[in-house]
Image (cartoon, rainbow, N blue to C red; front, side):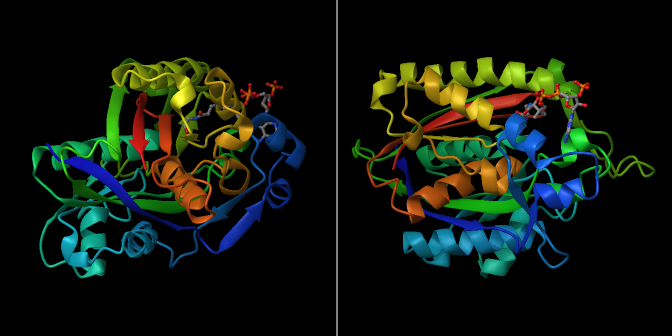
Length: 321
Ligand code: UT7
């Protein structure tokens, strides 16, 4: 079975940056509250021309360039998003067309903030099964278009952006690199803790985000820890083997708790939440792209990724870069 090698990463962040202070001019909140409760200082917000597909395509192009891969090496495009521009066709086929791909297949995955880990897992399975040799895995979100901008308990938390990785099939006997394992979970009985209260199927309710933040926080700390433990156990590894934690970026307090639990020094945890806020499925590939671009994460480093989001969905991935 081929191994899925993570060959290149890419990112796109909208041009417009909105600070906490700018939000505090419009709603009853403050920079101090947002920072102390979440670690967020600012977020990027998409303008009209920055669609989900446009951002996904920009991130994908960069991932291909960094992998030194040609478009004709891509067999599949998978986009994790909760905020597609259209219900269908999938954002992924828009990306396929924009890249000029003449073949292959493309589809979206809906797993909210866990979407990137889910998409990575599906891509890994396809590469192991021999169904594809080159796969673009993208997380792209425009949550700003889903927010109730009068609800201070949610609108301060999210931002827009896209991140992408290009995976290529490597030799089966190459143990030195690649996705070692992914672990996925969902518990639909907890679906009402974080959801969009509408959809196109409900014409009078396009939907905005609703969240029970306190309960999500409680589940996140427990479930993310167990997903990481599961990843380490499945590979016979100890936490001391981890070089980098690249977590979903929802709340600095959750990220810090995970880092401490793994006994990782803070400089081994990639944190972007201060500048990006929560970009849902885009947050992990955005953080990964930043840490690879600035030289922190290097080839052969062991990276653990974890995420939890609406569903509830959660999971982890262990990758030798
Ligand atoms: O990515 C998907 C996964 N999502 C998460 O992981 C999010 C997990 N949850 C969280 O990050 C945190 O629960 C929040 C950041 C959402 C909230 O922090 P919290 O410490 O749980 O605060 P809270 O919801 O318990 O609210 C505390 C107080 C409330 O006032 P009272 O009732 O105590 O008087 C809120 O009304 O803070 C108030 N509040 C605000 N105040 C100023 C809520 N939002 C704001 C705000 N500015 N933006």
